[in-house]
Image (tube, rainbow, N blue to C red; front, top):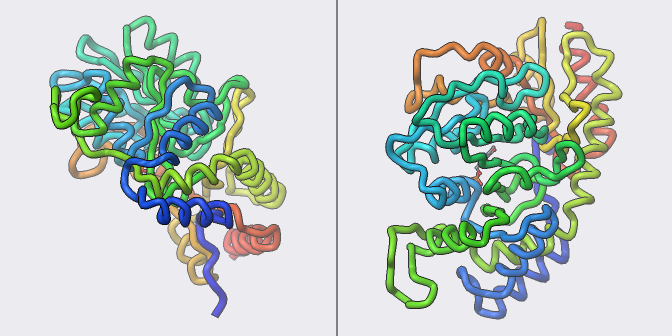
Length: 362
Ligand SMILES: Cc1ncc(COP(=O)(O)O)c(C=O)c1O
């Protein structure tokens, strides 16, 4: 039987294996060891940030960011409702309240014209969704006016650019995920980037049980064990070397899909605003006039994996509120992520697109 075409898969080669073998052989298998600092340095300088503090995953990176900024009980944090759930969850981890915001219909990220701000609002998490950047100028200008902290969530947008500058350079802290389906991976893994030395140090301390860096086993604050391991970082060091190549592949995959799907009525192609470089983390389209869910089943039966867009967070049981955020709700019900892993071939893209074409004409 033919293997299914997966939505995503990691591209792991000899250099990754060599690094992991060397980490295992060195005995540094936990969260001490040379690959960690190397990965932090290499990734932060790739993005253009002064400090990189790695963590066990992208969710813990976001949690560390909020904790380091002192966001907590009584505070509100603006988040896009159309997003992976961990963003809303981390706000509640620190005791703050997520305030859900609708999406921009053109590029699907948080809509800066729909922010509800009051005296309790302390921060905004700008999530660069599915590889497309947020409108950072608008977000930064509103944040300045209302004295809000801006945190970027770049989990899905390694190397994406806003007006020629990589995302991860706009917020006071930016957070990344290196989960297996991300543009580069460490298996599980995350990182906070910042240009602020004091914040970087606070994140490092919180990541390591709140331990005083100059006095072992003395804990000044309550922290967490959110450290990355040397094994994860060994993988990361090899992956950072390939990051530009992976982004090029993602953009090529998107171009090949676009060429075929552009002529199918009922399919909206992924956005790329004039000010944006989309890295197409997952190639994402909208399906109108046909059932997106029936298309998912149809593709599944043809051996093609696909994914519906995220559900809006404000509709999930733990966060549910009686609020209508129509753009996000609509995008969520018609959005579809297609296979876009780095190993996908041109023939497979053609096959997938032809299946979509066939479905739309049944
Ligand atoms: C936008 C966004 N933020 C945060 C995360 C959380 O990252 P992780 O899965 O590494 O905890 C994800 C998920 O992968 C994500 O897509």
